[in-house]
Image (cartoon, rainbow, N blue to C red; front, top):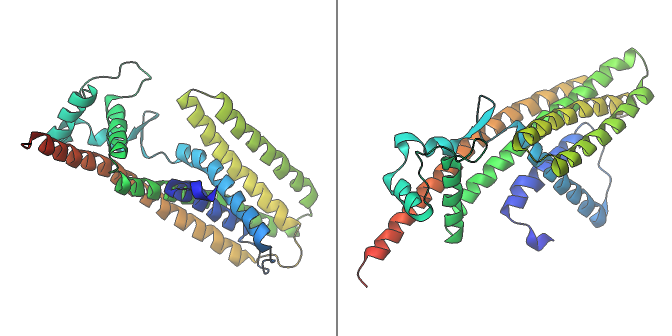
Length: 289
């Protein structure tokens, strides 16, 4: 299994999952128990699975583009529209793939010429093994998007701990509240499975995954309340929890901003690399044998 892990597995799934797992354990101030090799492998596997759950949810909540009238307009759409398209690129797309960037989509819900062109450019670079730099940009923006999502969920989780700490003086409600996270977690898991297995329409799937993400956030608030209200010695202080909330919000905002930067760089890298490859290809084909 380890041999099959690639750059994208590491940056898109494992590291964001590991960060989320670390955030979930951050309120505990005691020393971590020795888990041994088997325990470490188990927790690393949990982080990888968490990353797979986090990836589609953060993709829906933090799309790599701009929302315009409910539609995601990717940065590549702007780079392949209007007069900004290099002539070499537009001519190559027309000659190789019969894609006219000025044409309208073949059907209302179908891909735009820009989306199809970008996919062809990317596939061409992968085929000629010239996509390494672009893949690094893609890995960075997916990683940072995952970090942003993990931090947003962390804000809810730490807020739950803070609410549980402040509510201790009002009533002992650990048992009553404790049942809600368990039911909520099962509901979120079921919803995730149903969304991935049943929902086929892209727009409906995105809306469902957005709701699931915020549903996970609500569940984590309840989990934080339950854990804090049932915890005895070693409960973190209010100042520590406030610090975790502020730090998570700050890191999440920075990660989201940088993920959008790398998403733009990914699109630019694909198109510019495609242009260079086409120029070199034309130069070789026109050179005398």
